[in-house]
Length: 463
Ligand SMILES: NC(=O)c1ccc[n+]([C@@H]2O[C@H](COP(=O)([O-])OP(=O)(O)OC[C@H]3O[C@@H](n4cnc5c(N)ncnc54)[C@H](O)[C@@H]3O)[C@@H](O)[C@H]2O)c1
Ligand SMILES: [Zn+2]
Image 1 (spheres, rainbow, N blue to C red):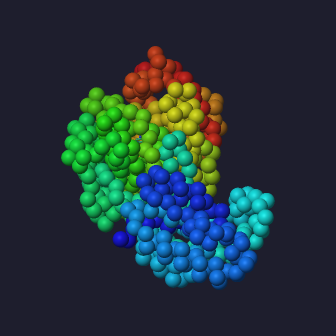
Image 2 (image 1 turned 60 degrees about the vertical axis):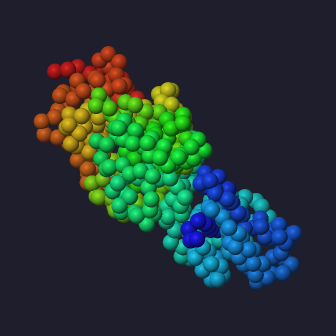
Image 3 (image 1 turned 30 degrees about the vertical axis):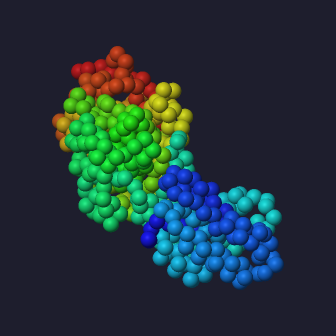
């Protein structure tokens, strides 16, 4: 049965063992560490076998143990391979036929040296990893990063979803389900595409689908879609039998860098967006950049807007143009800005999390005044630039800052000026209605420069 096994491969000390164990636990799969199996079956450790018998004999032993392992039945399984297991073409063919091989991105020489530390034999290990770089690079499925975001394990790469959606109970965005039938053959439920479906009625439909499928306390449901699908599925999971686990496969750039972490789930009401909800983080977030290939350019640009917001908050490198599909490594770096802030303020209580609201006070007002015809990303670009202008007026930023920030958003194909007929004055009543207001003072998270966002209460006067 192809694809029930996920093989983790990569250079020594790239994290195959630690990650293999974590991934198996979150995926609900069995875990096998090949080196451990070899040590157990031979009754001696690998360096001893190497020293006594040489590499050729070791590879034969390794092949035998691999075959034995794969002959054992398993519903779902993660196998952490050795650092050179797939140098043997037969082993490689065997693993590629039995499941999905994912290669951990080789850490650079410096990082490798840090991980291996002063352990004996560390230099030959590091050198060997470098010489093998082309071999590792020949594997198309890659894992660029894995880290914890609160209680969630986040993995970022490509070629991950085929294997990790095996055996799942997926709730999928209808467009995504149609495009990726191979990966989502039988969704538990589909959600019609669009924010207008982010309603209690859809949550009700999900609960009913859970009931029909017999989803119980110990089951895990899986979201495959953009922020709408994640928010709805997470909320349905939070409330089903008083809370069951869920896994999130974000498929839009915005959902990958923003909505997938932070724990917020919920739905909209006619009275306002996101009014009903719960904090209920998924146990795992699988970010597979393969999904981005089918994303329309305008929706990709919406995600870019949030990425630029994170670049500003985190003072990230912004030398590369913000166009096209970002790499998994770039997405991981960007997402970590949000993850770090949420870590310090998981339930939005200490005020730290307000920084994530950068540009958003104006953005929400612009969105609302446009009757939600303007996309959220476009509104964020306009809002960030407008708020940068406020920062300059308050003497908190240099005058050049506005044009610099606007150029970055424009390069991503996003608008930077208020739409026709809208002025900051006409937005004031809407901003004062923002949930962060108190009296006529509104708390802004003003972008003042790269790596410089400040929470500033601003007195807003109408007219
Ligand atoms: N929970 C949070 O912390 C948080 C943070 C930010 C935003 N959000 C929420 O996220 C939502 C916006 O997310 P979004 O922009 O992902 O919207 P979305 O889920 O509506 O997706 C946008 C569109 O892209 C389509 N789509 C999704 N993946 C695709 C793919 N791989 N290929 C082709 N088409 C695809 C969808 O069908 C939809 O039409 C809002 O409801 C917002 O409130 C939540
Ligand atoms: Zn936003």
